[in-house]
Length: 230
Ligand code: B1M
Image 1 (cartoon, protein in one colour):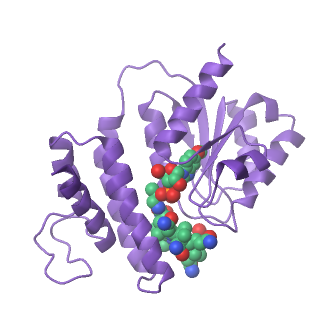
Image 2: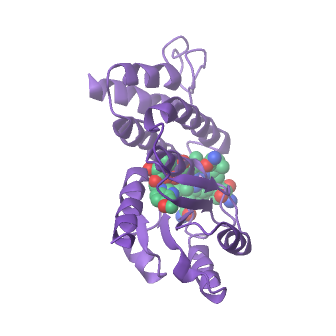
Image 3: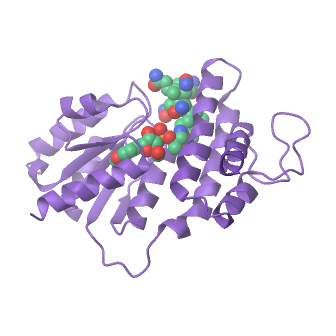
């Protein structure tokens, strides 16, 4: 039953169907539950947010990417699916946030220069807030100078960088260099993530941590926090 609901969420992300009113790309789907109704149903059934995000929403986006690569999908199709994931995250957010938790630390997050992909970064931000961190999300397409200035002014414990393009991930190394040149590198732990990255890449640019997915990012931030407090 859990697999069935998650499979339907994945399929409806692929179809870019936000609600039951949406037609989708295949015929005959109108009137059937969309991502909104299915996400609500999954929560009511007690399916974990981690399962919904990883095995429903993100799994659907992986197929969308494959269809784009195979030229079956175009930009508007990717945007429709992206919207469905964004709306589902607004439904999941209250279930991921613990109220009344004393802030554990501050993190600035951004998608790097030249990169407009923000869904993964938004998920990471929501999960970090839910885990009790104060998050300042600078947005997407953010250059090194803006990030360095934000670190200088806000003095966060963590900086989270996201990149989805092989052509933009290199800017993460530039940002770390710019922090070093500004004398700020030792004041902030840098965590990086995004589909084309790997642990090896993170090490090669001198980042302090790598998150394979949003939940992993929270684990990495928590473990760096506790290492710092020892
Ligand atoms: Co684009 N796109 N896209 N796209 N897009 C990819 C990334 C691509 C792999 C698709 C493909 O060809 N298979 C490909 C990149 C190829 C490459 O670089 N080698 C690609 C391309 C080519 C492009 C354009 C160049 C297309 C064009 O214009 N010709 C263009 C570039 C625009 C730009 O950025 N300058 C483009 C545009 C777009 C849209 C705007 C239409 C849309 C983005 C909408 C939006 O974000 N608001 C879009 C989408 C939706 C995708 C795919 C299909 C899905 C991305 C996504 O949201 N995934 C994507 C294919 C894919 O990734 N499978 C693709 C779901 C999301 C939850 O996962 O972002 O990986 P992800 O985040 C995860 C983890 O990576 C991790 O946790 C997240 C949650 O679990 N994570 C972190 C992410 N950041 C982290 C930070 C951390 C820790 C973990 O610490 C701080």
